Image 1 (cartoon, rainbow, N blue to C red):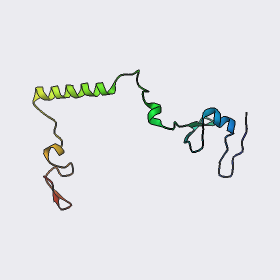
Image 2 (cartoon, one colour):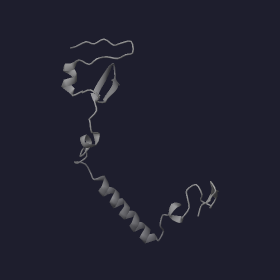
Image 3 (cartoon, helix red, strand yellow):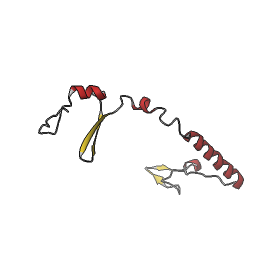
Image 4 (cartoon, helix red, strand yellow):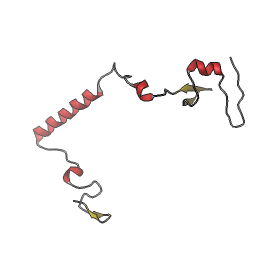
Length: 108
């Protein structure tokens, strides 16, 4: 097991063999995390979007669940005749519910 010496600033040099083993290259970001009585250094993927794409393929579809929830909400609105309206849909801003003038501009 290789041993390294920390500098006055706390810097260390990871031996080349260990860097190559885990794929740490110049300029690559790493995660440094204290775990119990030791420190773990793990490389971050170069492109996190591509790396994590498809990670939840085996699980339930969140998009399908959101679409289903929205459909149920629309059905409730149609049954009761009450529709949710935000200030923006009423022509007003959230900060001006009573048509106050703000910054010299009158909110509708």
